[in-house]
Image (tube, rainbow, N blue to C red; front, top):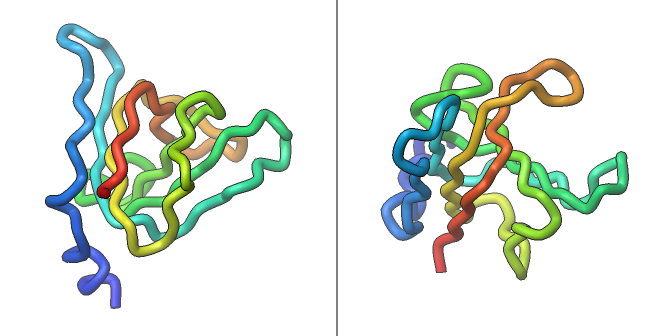
Length: 107
């Protein structure tokens, strides 16, 4: 099943890029596996779990935190493709995740 998701639409999203010379910046482009639409802390951000070969968070998985002002509208869901770039920071449970500065969603 995951192999099928990996093939879904990855080439259709514009790839997010880190600014030249940016330190601690990573990119991820992949199929959305899970979306946390409502963040428990109430700051309005959204979290995406991507199937991503680089695997910033774990093998083949990258978590992306998208601030409220960068949230795509409408919010994409599982099976859609998202690309993000930004610094890698620790999340609320200690996981490595991309704090997105740039976000693109496949049309």
